[in-house]
Image 1 (tube, one colour):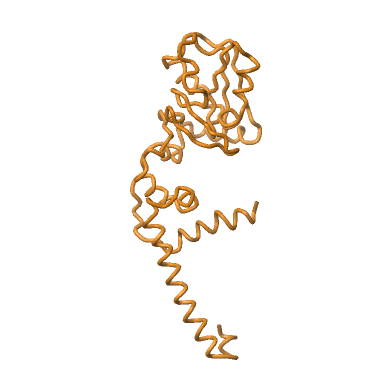
Image 2 (spheres, rainbow, N blue to C red):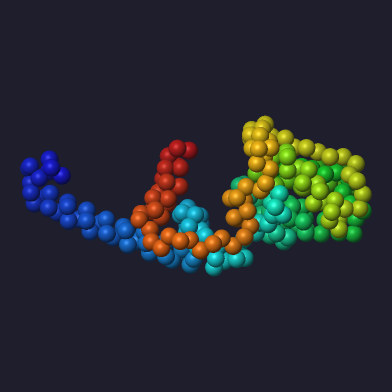
Length: 230
């Protein structure tokens, strides 16, 4: 601005005025989308701040599809969502990625599969069901869960009404990419992480009343910058 003012005070004046007008306009837009977050499309709110998502979930309880028992987290029975590869995922009566009603009327699972998102969101369980038929293959995988949680998932299963016999085979799907770090983390902090617990209950209404460019900054960071870094 100083350099511009040296050569043209008129241009400097217009730049200053439009900078102020533009800043006020952006600030108003930032607060508008923050205040309106409960009524905005979810895809937009997902790239806004956590406070905006908390406000959104307070108006859309049906979109909270996670639950936890204080040790592990799983999905609510009948929950439907889309995985990273756009596959439609439906969760069974215990909250795992198996066909609803798969174990009903059967004598229990012959094969159990434990793991994280590789078990929950991929076609691995379906492939094993086809290869091992007529044996029943049941997946207990949940994304983000490390090996220390497999025991607790197994305990959930054996305490349920669907457990009728010990499994003949247990498959442990260990992914070396992040399961080492998950194992270390959950050995130190065995309880369900707070961010997982928060996703399974209605969050508290945020205390922040206004936004000072936080929403626009979050949108830019999660779209433009993330694509540039990718």
